[in-house]
Image (cartoon, rainbow, N blue to C red; front, side, top):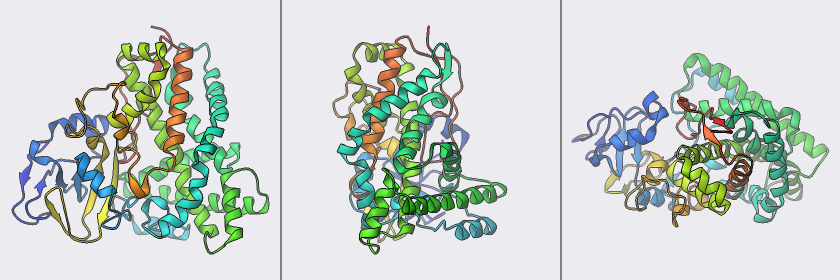
Length: 426
């Protein structure tokens, strides 16, 4: 990492007195490969807030500071949560706008009262009663997916299980026909590149075209469910709309589905991949899991702390405010490094160690906190627990294929191995 220095005058958007790290780039190859090595190299003066000119954001690394931001949504707006990191060229902008892709398209980037109006109906999909009722479907899907590779000595865990399990569950919950699952998965990949990556100008038109098609698909799905309701979330939302159209418009139903169709599975794909990776990288951990399945919930929470699938979220200040000793102006953009907060020595004992028996792992901030706490947290954890339990039951000798080079999608907000090769026998 570059030298961290105190910045005596405002430079590259930083306020006076705030440390600046000109080399910090969350989309650099080194960072994407292993952000924790980068984290360890940060000079001590970098904490808990420093400015990164590469992205124009203040990077917030301490647990307390991140929690403070989440706890004060009036001061720290969610408006930039999905803002592109790089300028979108005019042609791509026109395609997005014509396709109904507005600057504030979904719950994660809305503040009150608009956020609550969308969150309340969406929350119906994630009540504990409904999530518990989904257990048989999650178990059956896990069984079917693993049956497909039965007898194989080696397979890609992401392609086989981590990728299709949460997608199939979420898309089914929404009411998407099974024949369309693959198409939605592809669109979701484009969405990650647009909002949290650094797509080249020549790629932006293709991405924008796909996003417009994605939006149109969801509008058409809402229309179809209005004509023929079924037992799914889209139909439930249509019923709310019919009761009180001013409370929830059809466009807002499309917005809710847009949020859930991505966040409802991409994060869990990463969670399953990250958890299995961390359990297998030290074979004794997997042996413990297979011998004591009761450790699985703790292992999932420890992964959320130690290697979260959502390592970063973003906010912007609505007024001048002091955060961790740094005087921020109105409009300051914040890069909330949740992965760093999970390894904060002031928040967790021995944070650099993966410990499945840790009693406070569930204090992590991987699902956010407060107003925007992840609606699907319980569902995502349940899916990961069921997937790992079935893997452990079937493959007590499961191992990582040695010497594989893991790759990660080039974006700031979602992290999990794109491929994770595992071997069923030593």
